[in-house]
Amino acid sequence: MSKVLPAGAVAAGFTLRATPDQSLSLSDLAGRPVVLAFYPADWSPVCGDQMALYNEILPEFNKLDAEVLGISVDGVWCHEAFARDRRLHFPLLADFEPKGAVAKRYGAYREAEGVCERALFVIDRQGVIFWSFCSPIAVNPGADGILDALERLPKEGTSDGHVTSSSHAA
Amino acid sequence: MGTLRVPVTQHDHRKGPANAPVTLVEYGDFECPGCGAAHPIVNLVLQHFGPKLQFVFRHFPLTQVHLNAEPAAESAEFAGAHGRFWEMHDGIYENQDRLGPPLLFALAGALELSELELRNALASEKYAPKIKSDFLGGVRSGVNGTPSFFVNGLQHEGSYAFEDLVAAIEQHLHAKASL
Image 1: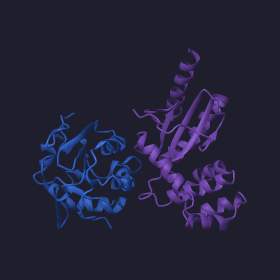
Image 2: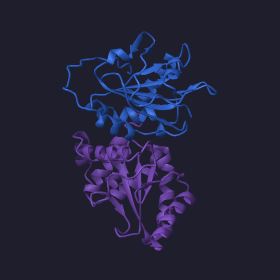
Image 3: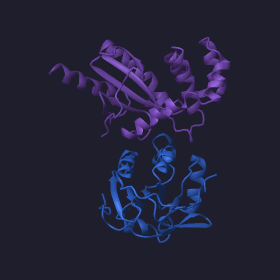
Image 4: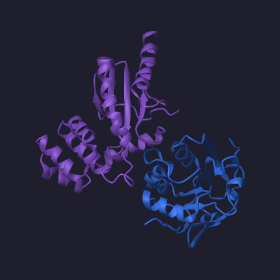
């Protein structure tokens, strides 16, 4: 298993495609907690799918003011079809070209298979990693660790932080 | 491995004696094929252990991918409010291949529950908060998909095959017996 960026490390900035015609940068979300969920591939079976689970929990993440981003090496068109099929309401980013470049900077890339780890990062409002976790690749890590970390984040004078992120799922 | 963060109470749907040495909790989704496959197995496991096992069912619907899961869960709660939870629960799983509003109303009718009352309950999402509360308790306990089982509060990491469930439950029975 890779050694993922630990708590206390500055979250590496990135700009990735979220849809065929839209990009999203980590810096767009400054001032809000961000949940970065690297996963190996789109299209895992529905009932145990990590992204389908986070999709259901989205209202809770939103209550905690957090933005959720899924990242894999799948391309934008694949992400688009997957997001539509699973009715996902948060962005999936394509770490597609150069392949896995962002995952590598987070220590979350599996060279042998050419896919991302199942690695979770909770990034605080200042862009510093507050909590990270790397799960065995076949194990959906669930969301309890993420929610616990988000609740432990220091509260901040709720900023106006008005950021509209693209919700590309239909 | 997760642990059950929400203890079993009288608000849960329970089968078997409350003082049974082992309690099996399932987090399930009525439209999940795995839960459908697990349903007859759980019944065999219950038969196998008799009064030594209590079974609890909690809702964990993936509502965005299983469009009938939420109405099915709400219908089961509606039946539960009339003391017929398990009949509705079993009826849904046993007819999962035709799950949809017509099945839910037909099951309610067969249980002599008012279809109009069910329609109103679904329209007003009367039982949605209970289902949401089950779901969130599951999330906080480490449930990552369905079906998920807990044996005496510990997440079951094996499969839901009869042998795996029986082995996990026996382990807890033996642990109790040797105390």
